[in-house]
Length: 301
Image (tube, rainbow, N blue to C red; front, side, top):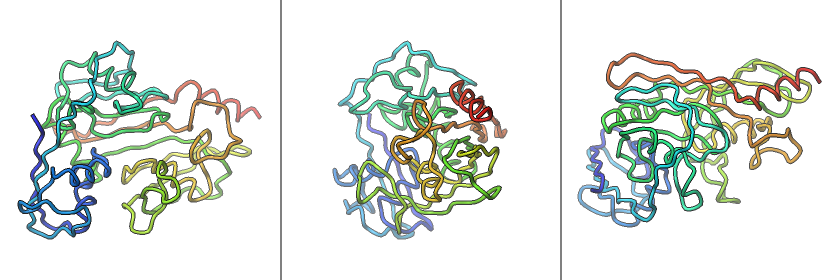
């Protein structure tokens, strides 16, 4: 059955599509806009445009369409499950693995693997993204939380929206950063030049990244990054914006870079309030071997 979402707006104002993306952080803005266009979103019983300015007391109903165009098959693909209980799974995703199926990646994704290894997954995100509360890029490795039921999913997603979860990354960037730490507060949106890219956009979605220098090399810097928000390509765009693009990044980095399998970016630490016990739990995943070997080489150069 189609999933229904109901919201009564209290203080949020702004464009309808932007507000709904904030309310449903695991759904992309493009999906929200498509639902609005197809008449799956009503405001006070009316179908309105994506640029409608939401008002306090507005009642918004979303009928999330069933995703039946893609058959998602369970596949016996090895994955590293760091933690699992009746509500939550924490997975250490390998670099190169897509999180969920799409037109270009119908098999071999984390979702295909989860459907084989995990008996129950939440259904809030439909058949294409069961259990997926948040995503990381294909060539980014590291920790993801996955919900096994809808109640857990809603509570975990709310923590992302309220910025109470912990997400820390390790990245290797081009250049030598002179200061020890800093904060990048620059709004993100789709690039007006290349629609496949994200860019710093006036009026874009709030995006805040904190970084701390861990180690300096001759031409590179190892940094720890803490996310306040989780926008698409946020770390990659923000580090490029301040002049220190990620090593190995095929989209936002320089052509002459370190050999690897994509950007040197790893979601090392993940923390959240457990949806049932209320305990704040934290998990860590070691750097992939290729990342460690690259650091060793840089230290010996």
